[in-house]
Amino acid sequence: MKDAKTAILVTSFGTSYNDSRKAAIEALEKTIADAYPLWEVRRAFTSGMIIEKLARRDGVRIDNVAEALERLATQGVERLYIQPTHVMNGNEYEEVAREAEAFRKRFKSIALGSPLLTASNDYEEVVRVLAEEYAPAPDQALVFMGHGTGHYADAAYAALDYRFKARGHKNIFVGTVEGYPALEDVMGFLEEGNFRKVMLAPLMVVAGDHALNDMAGDEEDSWKSVLTQKGYEVECRLKGLGEIPAIRDIYAAHLRTAIEGTDNEV
Image (cartoon, rainbow, N blue to C red; front, side, top):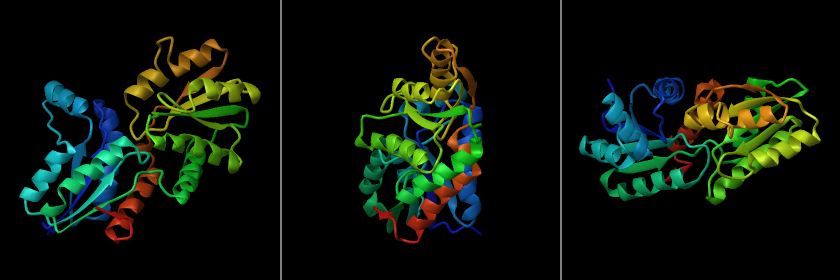
């Protein structure tokens, strides 16, 4: 019998691509649910645009964070653990923290788990997991596409890129769509390394719109098209981070830390 007084809320930006949602977000939620079978695991999305699109197109209603918190409080949950699926401590994560803080008095306790890239050891683990997962050939460059942000957490992308190099992966690079490093910065390193083959992969929990269009699309400004026009042989891997079991385990470990009371209690 489940413990009705304790629950876990998994918060994600969300995606309107149903297959990607099942492969990444639902898989991550299942990893967490399997680890805590006596507790209810709920879902919330932070993107109002995606929530509205799913409701309009598919008739699927997904709570935003405030709605999920209100529902849990009304249903008598007393101890709540929140695990965001965000990659870094940026705007989306801070908004989840603010929403949780607003509900502090409605629960006996609320604890918030960390995003994927938080502690130094997280970077080490992500480098190890992704290098093993994609295993590019020595003459092939592996380029990850991150989202990028105007938030100071944008520095996480350059830090991850540096960590790949520090661990001997001279052919693995990190770029962003809306931050730094940009594709142009990465291309400079590709030229320096005399690479002619490039593998592209999303550094995002879900292989959604950015991965399918900005990275692997056929439009002339997609990363695939830009690199192909420059003479590179391009291979695209459409796999979100949430589809990789070892990445899901990192998120689960962050939740475990929150549950044990040594993380960010709101």
